Length: 401
Image (cartoon, rainbow, N blue to C red; front, side, top):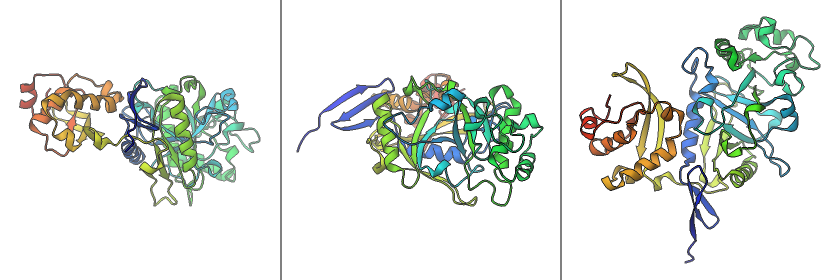
Protein backbone atom coordinates (compact mmCIF):
# COMPACT_ATOMS: atom_id res chain seq x y z
CA UNK A 1 0.00 0.00 0.00
CA UNK A 2 1.44 3.35 -1.03
CA UNK A 3 1.69 5.88 1.80
CA UNK A 4 0.80 9.50 1.00
CA UNK A 5 3.10 12.21 2.25
CA UNK A 6 1.50 14.62 4.69
CA UNK A 7 2.33 18.20 5.57
CA UNK A 8 0.81 21.17 7.32
CA UNK A 9 0.31 24.33 5.30
CA UNK A 10 -0.24 27.62 7.10
CA UNK A 11 -2.67 29.85 5.15
CA UNK A 12 -3.38 32.62 7.61
CA UNK A 13 -6.95 31.28 7.81
CA UNK A 14 -6.21 28.07 9.69
CA UNK A 15 -4.21 24.96 8.85
CA UNK A 16 -4.59 22.80 5.80
CA UNK A 17 -3.58 19.16 5.91
CA UNK A 18 -2.20 17.99 2.57
CA UNK A 19 -2.34 14.34 1.55
CA UNK A 20 -0.50 14.28 -1.77
CA UNK A 21 -2.86 16.04 -4.19
CA UNK A 22 -5.78 16.07 -1.73
CA UNK A 23 -6.17 19.13 0.47
CA UNK A 24 -8.53 19.27 3.41
CA UNK A 25 -9.56 22.50 5.10
CA UNK A 26 -9.85 21.47 8.72
CA UNK A 27 -11.97 24.50 9.66
CA UNK A 28 -14.46 24.12 6.82
CA UNK A 29 -17.69 22.13 6.65
CA UNK A 30 -19.63 22.25 3.40
CA UNK A 31 -22.70 20.74 5.06
CA UNK A 32 -22.60 23.57 7.59
CA UNK A 33 -22.52 26.16 4.78
CA UNK A 34 -25.50 24.54 3.07
CA UNK A 35 -27.42 24.57 6.35
CA UNK A 36 -26.62 28.26 6.90
CA UNK A 37 -27.72 29.16 3.38
CA UNK A 38 -31.06 27.44 3.93
CA UNK A 39 -31.48 29.36 7.19
CA UNK A 40 -30.65 32.68 5.51
CA UNK A 41 -33.10 31.91 2.71
CA UNK A 42 -35.97 31.21 5.10
CA UNK A 43 -35.33 34.13 7.44
CA UNK A 44 -37.47 37.17 6.61
CA UNK A 45 -36.85 39.88 9.21
CA UNK A 46 -38.41 43.32 8.94
CA UNK A 47 -34.96 44.68 9.79
CA UNK A 48 -31.71 43.41 11.27
CA UNK A 49 -32.07 44.79 14.75
CA UNK A 50 -32.81 48.47 14.26
CA UNK A 51 -35.00 50.45 11.86
CA UNK A 52 -31.93 51.64 9.94
CA UNK A 53 -30.62 48.12 9.19
CA UNK A 54 -32.25 46.59 6.06
CA UNK A 55 -32.95 42.86 5.93
CA UNK A 56 -30.20 42.10 3.41
CA UNK A 57 -27.63 42.81 6.13
CA UNK A 58 -28.55 39.61 7.98
CA UNK A 59 -30.79 37.45 5.75
CA UNK A 60 -31.24 36.14 2.24
CA UNK A 61 -28.80 34.92 -0.39
CA UNK A 62 -26.74 37.60 -2.13
CA UNK A 63 -25.04 36.09 -5.16
CA UNK A 64 -23.52 36.85 -8.53
CA UNK A 65 -23.75 34.75 -11.69
CA UNK A 66 -20.38 34.44 -13.44
CA UNK A 67 -18.64 32.89 -16.42
CA UNK A 68 -15.26 31.26 -15.66
CA UNK A 69 -12.32 32.25 -17.84
CA UNK A 70 -8.53 32.08 -17.84
CA UNK A 71 -8.53 35.74 -18.96
CA UNK A 72 -9.92 37.11 -15.68
CA UNK A 73 -10.96 36.06 -12.19
CA UNK A 74 -14.67 35.34 -11.88
CA UNK A 75 -14.87 37.22 -8.58
CA UNK A 76 -13.45 40.43 -10.08
CA UNK A 77 -15.75 43.19 -11.44
CA UNK A 78 -15.34 43.91 -15.15
CA UNK A 79 -13.48 47.06 -16.25
CA UNK A 80 -16.85 48.58 -17.27
CA UNK A 81 -18.25 47.86 -13.81
CA UNK A 82 -15.24 49.44 -12.13
CA UNK A 83 -15.67 52.52 -14.32
CA UNK A 84 -19.34 52.78 -13.34
CA UNK A 85 -18.62 52.25 -9.65
CA UNK A 86 -21.10 49.39 -9.27
CA UNK A 87 -21.61 45.76 -10.24
CA UNK A 88 -24.63 43.48 -10.17
CA UNK A 89 -25.82 40.74 -7.83
CA UNK A 90 -29.18 39.10 -7.21
CA UNK A 91 -31.02 38.56 -3.94
CA UNK A 92 -32.87 35.32 -3.23
CA UNK A 93 -35.11 34.75 -0.21
CA UNK A 94 -38.32 32.86 0.57
CA UNK A 95 -40.24 36.06 -0.23
CA UNK A 96 -37.99 37.15 -3.11
CA UNK A 97 -37.99 34.26 -5.57
CA UNK A 98 -37.25 33.77 -9.26
CA UNK A 99 -36.67 30.77 -11.48
CA UNK A 100 -33.79 31.84 -13.74
CA UNK A 101 -30.59 33.87 -13.72
CA UNK A 102 -29.45 36.58 -16.08
CA UNK A 103 -28.82 35.12 -19.55
CA UNK A 104 -29.76 31.72 -18.05
CA UNK A 105 -26.30 31.40 -16.53
CA UNK A 106 -25.83 28.45 -14.22
CA UNK A 107 -23.03 29.14 -11.75
CA UNK A 108 -21.41 31.86 -9.69
CA UNK A 109 -20.59 32.75 -6.09
CA UNK A 110 -22.52 33.55 -2.92
CA UNK A 111 -21.35 36.12 -0.38
CA UNK A 112 -21.86 36.53 3.35
CA UNK A 113 -24.57 38.93 4.53
CA UNK A 114 -22.60 41.95 5.82
CA UNK A 115 -23.47 41.42 9.48
CA UNK A 116 -22.34 37.79 9.38
CA UNK A 117 -19.11 38.17 7.42
CA UNK A 118 -16.21 36.66 9.40
CA UNK A 119 -13.72 38.99 10.98
CA UNK A 120 -11.13 40.05 8.43
CA UNK A 121 -13.50 39.77 5.47
CA UNK A 122 -14.52 42.83 3.49
CA UNK A 123 -17.94 44.37 4.12
CA UNK A 124 -20.01 44.98 1.01
CA UNK A 125 -21.83 48.24 0.30
CA UNK A 126 -25.27 47.82 -1.32
CA UNK A 127 -26.44 50.83 -3.32
CA UNK A 128 -29.85 50.10 -4.82
CA UNK A 129 -32.36 47.34 -5.50
CA UNK A 130 -34.45 46.63 -8.61
CA UNK A 131 -37.36 44.15 -8.22
CA UNK A 132 -36.51 42.85 -11.72
CA UNK A 133 -33.42 43.13 -13.92
CA UNK A 134 -32.68 46.85 -14.04
CA UNK A 135 -30.47 46.94 -17.17
CA UNK A 136 -27.97 48.67 -14.92
CA UNK A 137 -25.14 48.59 -17.44
CA UNK A 138 -26.75 51.58 -19.21
CA UNK A 139 -27.68 53.58 -16.09
CA UNK A 140 -25.97 56.51 -14.39
CA UNK A 141 -24.99 56.73 -10.71
CA UNK A 142 -23.25 53.38 -10.27
CA UNK A 143 -26.03 51.71 -12.28
CA UNK A 144 -28.80 53.00 -10.00
CA UNK A 145 -29.91 56.15 -11.86
CA UNK A 146 -31.33 57.16 -15.22
CA UNK A 147 -31.24 54.55 -18.00
CA UNK A 148 -30.26 55.43 -21.55
CA UNK A 149 -33.14 54.70 -23.94
CA UNK A 150 -35.84 54.63 -21.26
CA UNK A 151 -39.34 55.55 -22.44
CA UNK A 152 -40.22 57.37 -19.21
CA UNK A 153 -38.58 58.66 -16.05
CA UNK A 154 -36.17 55.92 -14.93
CA UNK A 155 -34.48 57.79 -12.09
CA UNK A 156 -34.39 56.42 -8.53
CA UNK A 157 -37.88 55.78 -7.15
CA UNK A 158 -37.84 58.30 -4.30
CA UNK A 159 -36.92 61.10 -6.70
CA UNK A 160 -40.15 60.39 -8.55
CA UNK A 161 -42.29 60.26 -5.42
CA UNK A 162 -42.47 56.47 -5.60
CA UNK A 163 -42.13 54.94 -2.14
CA UNK A 164 -44.30 51.80 -2.15
CA UNK A 165 -44.42 48.51 -4.02
CA UNK A 166 -47.84 49.39 -5.38
CA UNK A 167 -46.61 52.70 -6.80
CA UNK A 168 -43.64 50.92 -8.39
CA UNK A 169 -45.95 48.34 -9.96
CA UNK A 170 -48.39 50.97 -11.27
CA UNK A 171 -45.51 52.67 -13.06
CA UNK A 172 -44.31 49.34 -14.43
CA UNK A 173 -47.78 48.63 -15.86
CA UNK A 174 -47.91 52.12 -17.39
CA UNK A 175 -44.48 51.49 -18.94
CA UNK A 176 -45.72 48.16 -20.37
CA UNK A 177 -43.22 46.25 -18.25
CA UNK A 178 -40.21 47.87 -19.87
CA UNK A 179 -37.21 47.19 -17.64
CA UNK A 180 -35.33 50.30 -18.75
CA UNK A 181 -38.16 52.52 -17.56
CA UNK A 182 -38.51 51.05 -14.07
CA UNK A 183 -37.05 52.80 -11.07
CA UNK A 184 -34.71 51.36 -8.47
CA UNK A 185 -35.09 51.63 -4.71
CA UNK A 186 -32.36 53.48 -2.83
CA UNK A 187 -30.91 51.29 -0.05
CA UNK A 188 -27.65 53.13 0.66
CA UNK A 189 -26.37 53.31 4.21
CA UNK A 190 -26.91 57.06 4.40
CA UNK A 191 -30.63 56.58 3.70
CA UNK A 192 -30.89 54.98 7.17
CA UNK A 193 -34.51 54.10 8.08
CA UNK A 194 -35.62 54.93 4.54
CA UNK A 195 -33.22 52.31 3.21
CA UNK A 196 -35.00 49.64 5.24
CA UNK A 197 -38.42 50.79 4.08
CA UNK A 198 -37.22 50.91 0.46
CA UNK A 199 -35.73 47.43 0.61
CA UNK A 200 -38.92 45.96 2.09
CA UNK A 201 -41.01 47.61 -0.63
CA UNK A 202 -38.66 46.27 -3.32
CA UNK A 203 -39.16 42.74 -1.95
CA UNK A 204 -42.93 43.24 -1.80
CA UNK A 205 -42.98 44.53 -5.38
CA UNK A 206 -41.65 41.18 -6.58
CA UNK A 207 -44.92 39.47 -5.62
CA UNK A 208 -47.26 41.88 -7.40
CA UNK A 209 -49.06 40.94 -10.62
CA UNK A 210 -50.36 37.59 -11.85
CA UNK A 211 -46.98 35.87 -11.77
CA UNK A 212 -45.01 38.50 -9.93
CA UNK A 213 -41.41 38.52 -11.07
CA UNK A 214 -40.87 34.75 -10.80
CA UNK A 215 -39.66 34.57 -14.41
CA UNK A 216 -36.89 37.15 -14.06
CA UNK A 217 -34.14 37.71 -11.51
CA UNK A 218 -33.97 40.90 -9.48
CA UNK A 219 -30.88 43.10 -9.44
CA UNK A 220 -28.91 44.51 -6.56
CA UNK A 221 -26.02 46.93 -7.20
CA UNK A 222 -22.93 46.77 -4.99
CA UNK A 223 -20.19 49.39 -4.87
CA UNK A 224 -16.99 48.25 -6.55
CA UNK A 225 -15.02 50.56 -4.26
CA UNK A 226 -15.87 48.25 -1.34
CA UNK A 227 -14.67 45.15 -3.24
CA UNK A 228 -10.87 45.05 -3.15
CA UNK A 229 -9.75 42.41 -5.65
CA UNK A 230 -6.13 43.06 -4.69
CA UNK A 231 -6.88 41.20 -1.45
CA UNK A 232 -8.95 38.29 -2.79
CA UNK A 233 -8.43 36.19 0.35
CA UNK A 234 -10.47 38.78 2.29
CA UNK A 235 -13.44 38.88 -0.09
CA UNK A 236 -16.68 37.78 1.63
CA UNK A 237 -17.19 34.71 -0.58
CA UNK A 238 -19.16 32.06 1.28
CA UNK A 239 -19.63 29.47 -1.48
CA UNK A 240 -19.49 28.79 -5.18
CA UNK A 241 -22.82 27.56 -6.51
CA UNK A 242 -24.12 25.81 -9.57
CA UNK A 243 -27.48 25.16 -11.19
CA UNK A 244 -28.08 22.16 -13.49
CA UNK A 245 -25.28 22.06 -16.05
CA UNK A 246 -22.95 24.39 -14.13
CA UNK A 247 -20.97 22.02 -11.92
CA UNK A 248 -17.80 21.99 -14.02
CA UNK A 249 -17.63 25.79 -14.04
CA UNK A 250 -18.20 25.97 -10.27
CA UNK A 251 -15.40 23.46 -9.73
CA UNK A 252 -13.13 25.58 -11.91
CA UNK A 253 -13.86 28.61 -9.74
CA UNK A 254 -13.26 26.64 -6.53
CA UNK A 255 -9.85 25.50 -7.77
CA UNK A 256 -8.96 28.94 -9.09
CA UNK A 257 -9.91 30.71 -5.87
CA UNK A 258 -8.02 28.21 -3.74
CA UNK A 259 -4.89 28.38 -5.88
CA UNK A 260 -5.03 32.18 -5.71
CA UNK A 261 -5.84 32.62 -2.03
CA UNK A 262 -5.32 29.29 -0.19
CA UNK A 263 -8.89 29.76 1.04
CA UNK A 264 -11.16 26.78 0.43
CA UNK A 265 -14.89 27.42 0.11
CA UNK A 266 -17.42 24.74 -0.86
CA UNK A 267 -19.30 24.15 -4.08
CA UNK A 268 -23.04 24.13 -3.36
CA UNK A 269 -25.79 22.71 -5.57
CA UNK A 270 -28.48 25.40 -5.70
CA UNK A 271 -31.96 24.82 -7.09
CA UNK A 272 -34.17 27.81 -7.89
CA UNK A 273 -37.94 27.64 -7.27
CA UNK A 274 -39.99 26.97 -10.39
CA UNK A 275 -43.08 28.60 -8.90
CA UNK A 276 -43.88 30.75 -5.89
CA UNK A 277 -45.23 27.65 -4.16
CA UNK A 278 -41.78 26.06 -4.30
CA UNK A 279 -38.61 26.81 -2.36
CA UNK A 280 -34.99 27.07 -3.39
CA UNK A 281 -32.62 24.41 -2.07
CA UNK A 282 -28.94 24.35 -1.13
CA UNK A 283 -27.11 21.04 -0.98
CA UNK A 284 -23.50 20.13 -0.26
CA UNK A 285 -22.34 17.03 -2.12
CA UNK A 286 -18.88 15.69 -1.36
CA UNK A 287 -18.60 14.37 -4.92
CA UNK A 288 -19.10 17.91 -6.30
CA UNK A 289 -15.92 19.24 -4.71
CA UNK A 290 -12.91 19.78 -6.95
CA UNK A 291 -10.85 19.90 -3.75
CA UNK A 292 -11.74 17.44 -1.01
CA UNK A 293 -13.05 19.10 2.11
CA UNK A 294 -12.78 18.01 5.71
CA UNK A 295 -15.27 15.61 7.21
CA UNK A 296 -16.36 17.29 10.45
CA UNK A 297 -17.05 13.87 11.98
CA UNK A 298 -13.28 13.40 12.13
CA UNK A 299 -13.08 16.20 14.69
CA UNK A 300 -14.80 17.15 17.93
CA UNK A 301 -17.57 19.37 16.52
CA UNK A 302 -20.10 17.97 14.04
CA UNK A 303 -21.75 21.32 13.36
CA UNK A 304 -23.10 24.38 15.17
CA UNK A 305 -25.77 26.91 14.40
CA UNK A 306 -26.45 30.43 15.64
CA UNK A 307 -29.85 30.89 17.24
CA UNK A 308 -31.49 33.62 19.29
CA UNK A 309 -32.90 32.62 22.67
CA UNK A 310 -34.62 34.63 25.34
CA UNK A 311 -32.42 34.95 28.41
CA UNK A 312 -34.20 35.49 31.75
CA UNK A 313 -31.07 37.13 33.16
CA UNK A 314 -30.76 39.88 30.57
CA UNK A 315 -34.48 39.82 29.74
CA UNK A 316 -33.85 39.94 26.02
CA UNK A 317 -33.02 37.68 23.09
CA UNK A 318 -29.34 36.78 22.96
CA UNK A 319 -27.19 35.06 20.34
CA UNK A 320 -26.43 31.48 21.28
CA UNK A 321 -24.13 29.02 19.51
CA UNK A 322 -25.95 25.69 19.52
CA UNK A 323 -23.19 23.08 19.21
CA UNK A 324 -23.70 19.46 18.16
CA UNK A 325 -20.54 17.51 19.07
CA UNK A 326 -19.32 14.37 17.38
CA UNK A 327 -19.08 11.17 19.39
CA UNK A 328 -15.41 11.95 19.84
CA UNK A 329 -16.24 15.42 21.16
CA UNK A 330 -18.94 14.12 23.47
CA UNK A 331 -16.47 11.67 25.04
CA UNK A 332 -13.63 14.20 25.32
CA UNK A 333 -11.54 13.94 28.48
CA UNK A 334 -10.15 16.80 30.54
CA UNK A 335 -6.85 16.47 28.69
CA UNK A 336 -8.68 17.10 25.37
CA UNK A 337 -10.55 20.24 26.47
CA UNK A 338 -8.04 22.60 24.87
CA UNK A 339 -8.28 20.74 21.56
CA UNK A 340 -12.10 20.80 21.58
CA UNK A 341 -12.18 24.50 22.33
CA UNK A 342 -9.50 25.22 19.71
CA UNK A 343 -11.65 23.55 17.04
CA UNK A 344 -14.70 25.51 18.18
CA UNK A 345 -12.79 28.81 17.96
CA UNK A 346 -11.23 27.92 14.61
CA UNK A 347 -14.59 27.16 13.02
CA UNK A 348 -16.85 29.74 14.68
CA UNK A 349 -14.75 32.16 16.71
CA UNK A 350 -14.38 34.79 13.99
CA UNK A 351 -18.14 35.18 13.55
CA UNK A 352 -19.34 38.69 14.51
CA UNK A 353 -21.96 37.14 16.76
CA UNK A 354 -19.11 35.74 18.85
CA UNK A 355 -16.62 38.59 18.50
CA UNK A 356 -19.07 41.44 19.12
CA UNK A 357 -20.61 39.83 22.20
CA UNK A 358 -17.56 38.22 23.77
CA UNK A 359 -17.70 38.15 27.57
CA UNK A 360 -14.86 35.65 27.86
CA UNK A 361 -16.90 32.71 29.08
CA UNK A 362 -17.22 30.40 26.06
CA UNK A 363 -14.48 28.03 27.18
CA UNK A 364 -15.93 27.84 30.69
CA UNK A 365 -19.36 26.98 29.27
CA UNK A 366 -17.82 24.26 27.11
CA UNK A 367 -16.06 22.69 30.10
CA UNK A 368 -19.28 22.94 32.10
CA UNK A 369 -21.24 21.06 29.42
CA UNK A 370 -18.58 18.33 29.39
CA UNK A 371 -18.90 18.11 33.16
CA UNK A 372 -22.67 17.99 33.59
CA UNK A 373 -24.40 17.99 30.18
CA UNK A 374 -22.30 15.99 27.75
CA UNK A 375 -25.25 13.72 26.92
CA UNK A 376 -27.48 16.63 25.79
CA UNK A 377 -28.16 16.63 22.06
CA UNK A 378 -27.01 20.25 21.71
CA UNK A 379 -24.77 22.42 23.85
CA UNK A 380 -25.99 26.02 23.87
CA UNK A 381 -23.30 28.58 24.67
CA UNK A 382 -23.66 32.35 24.70
CA UNK A 383 -20.60 34.53 23.97
CA UNK A 384 -21.78 37.35 26.23
CA UNK A 385 -21.56 35.24 29.39
CA UNK A 386 -18.67 36.06 31.78
CA UNK A 387 -15.70 33.88 32.61
CA UNK A 388 -16.45 32.57 36.10
CA UNK A 389 -15.11 29.73 38.23
CA UNK A 390 -15.98 26.17 37.33
CA UNK A 391 -18.08 25.78 40.49
CA UNK A 392 -20.04 28.95 39.68
CA UNK A 393 -20.70 27.79 36.12
CA UNK A 394 -21.93 24.38 37.29
CA UNK A 395 -24.13 25.98 39.95
CA UNK A 396 -25.69 28.17 37.23
CA UNK A 397 -26.39 25.18 34.99
CA UNK A 398 -23.68 26.40 32.55
CA UNK A 399 -25.51 29.73 32.18
CA UNK A 400 -23.56 32.13 34.44
CA UNK A 401 -24.33 35.85 34.66
